[in-house]
Image 1: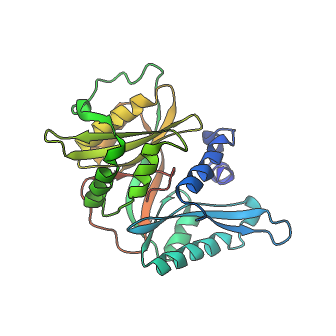
Image 2: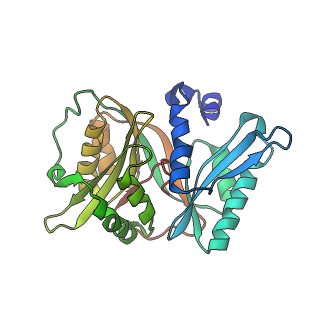
Length: 287
């Protein structure tokens, strides 16, 4: 992945020079979804040439991350792994979902050739959070944001199903147990105690990430993201922000964020009707 970003875009340095963040991904994936990874190995050396992580959910099969070694380029390995993943989804009777970079036209084209339909587009907004926290005033509704409790897992899963049409209760139990990785789960409630949004934050030293998340509206997103960013004082992080939330995008720019990439959600069926907004991430894959 880093090699592709460096060779094609000159952006390899953005991922740092330590392998530690990349080791965390398979550790989290294996803890959450044991033995779901698809690999391709060299017949002679048994070296891994490609890997594709799949994540079975109640409503779908999520796919990601998909990676191949530089020496495997042009050998059709990514397509072989993706076809295996799609065969698995077909056997489960579920749609397959993923989030892919719009800058990587090779992978985008592969997915659309395999039948994926592009849906929501996200701006990757980068933040370097000051050590002292955000200097902008706390937005309206931040006082209704709190840390989630273990018993909130089902409520969060129900909320996401109601607003986004997908369900992955296992993920929220995983985040709240906090056994592998280092997570904070934030929720916001309205005056009568109903959920208006949630946001997961990875505060692990190897990977500071915001998401997954889902909200009813831009106001809820603003309050949750303000709190999430304040949780990551002194760190750099990226938020995948839906382009269809223009007011939120402008707010994040005013806060000091800048757009560094575009991603698109893709699915093997027509996009589901949704309400509110979703915030995907890659740890774990949350399409």
